[in-house]
Image (cartoon, rainbow, N blue to C red; front, top):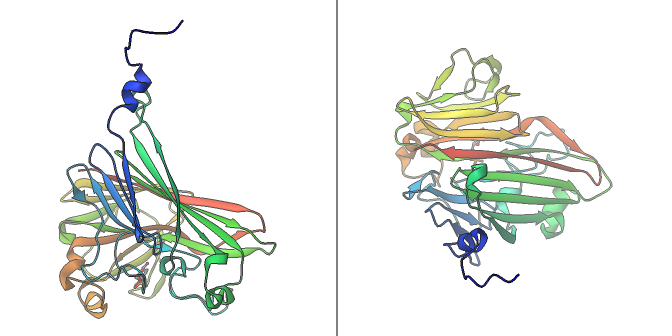
Length: 316
Ligand SMILES: O=P(O)(O)OC[C@H]1O[C@@H](O)[C@H](O)[C@@H](O)[C@@H]1O
C-alpha cells in the first residue's frame, strides 16, 4: 500500500540532513563533515595538508614555508613515501629513485569520493572517502626509467568523527615481481614537544639514525623527546602508538598491515638546515609518527596487490 502520511522514513529523514561537502579544485580536494571535521588533500603527492577536528582544531603540522606548487615534496601534513624509504640503497632496484621515493613528488589523480551515513546503532559516524590514484603510465620517462615497473596505487583518505584513515593499495600491473617500501610520513601538530610523550613502543627494537646505532631496544615504556630523534621502530607488537600531551592522550595512531613506525623530530640544528622548515622553532610544535613497512622490502608478484594504512584518532 502506498504510504500517503508524508511521514519521513528514517532513511529519508537522515538523507535530508546536512551532508558532507567535497570541493575539488585544480590543486586538490577539500572535504568537510556537517559536524565540523575537515580534510584537505593536495594532488601533488596526494599529500594531506590539513586535518581539522570538530572545533577547527588543526591536527597536522605544516611548515609555513612548505612548497605547495608541485616543485618539491611538502614539508608537513602526510606525504606518501613509496617505493623506497630514505635514500635508496645502491644495491637495490630502487637505487636511482630520490630520497623517500617518487610518490610524494608527482601529481596524483582524484578518482572520486564516496560518502557513507553512520548508523548510531553500530556506533559508526558519517564519513567521506576520497580516492587518489597514481599509475606508472603517468610518470615521466625519466622516473619510469629509474624504476621500470608497471604499478597502480590507490590512496584512500577517509574522514569521520572517529578520525582520519589513510590507506595505500599497491598493485603490480606487470609480469615481473617488484619490491617496495611504504611510509605514511605524518607530521602531528603538538602544543609543546617538551611536554609530549609517546607510548606503545615499549621493548621494541629500533635503529637510531642520530646515534648511528643499527640496533637498540626501547627500555622505557614512555618516550620523551629532548633533542633530535630519528628512529625506526621495527615489527611492533602493539598496533597502536599513542601521543600524550602533559600526560593526557592527544593522538592514537593505529597501524593496519604495517608493522614499523618512524619517530622523527629534527630539533634545532636540522630544522635550521631545511630551507622549507619554518618557523625555525617549529620543531617544538611537531612530531612525526610515521607508520610504514620500511624494514626490508615487500615483494609483489605480477598481478598481485597489497594494502596497508593507518587510522589517526584526535583525542581532544
Ligand atoms: O627531508 P625529508 O626527505 O622529507 O626527510 C625527512 C626525514 O624523514 C624521516 O622519515 C627520516 O627518518 C629522516 O631521516 C628524514 O630526515
